[in-house]
Image (cartoon, rainbow, N blue to C red; front, side):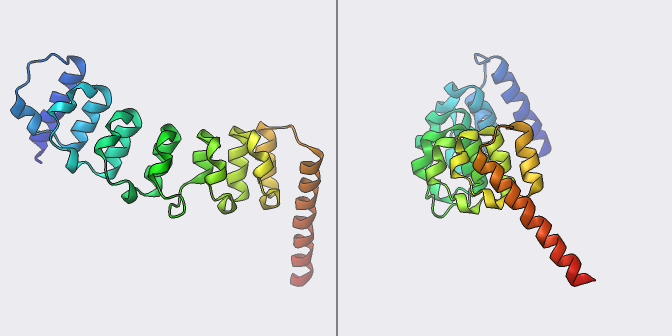
Length: 195
């Protein structure tokens, strides 16, 4: 697509976003790219009957469209091809599509997804979360604390979490002390070996 056509398409989409009753010839719709269509349909889904580029949308365009206009999901048939970035973004906003993907095969950004949709905790690979991931997640969703592997926390993770969620149980305080002692012992061992 030439720069001139792209500019004309942008102006056409801008016009339709401002005035959906604008007098536009059918031929003008044919020049719109997948990205142009997603931009238009995300705000004005009533133009769907004019779109003839459904098969040309890439996965990123589909996810952007379905995230804002989930009624178009029935036109999408490449769920298995979505990458983890697509799944994470889509499910964080539209959790009703959770059964469309294979949770075992996906390398979803679990802590990000759970920070928006904690109901997926039982479906996620929580073992893959680092102490830093847990620290970020528990700042947003403290109710997931019972699923956390506190042993993964280092001092920085605790500090960041406790700044946002200062309440701790006795068990968590004991774990904090254990982490601190473990790190201090590691430091002393290294110091002794390097002398």
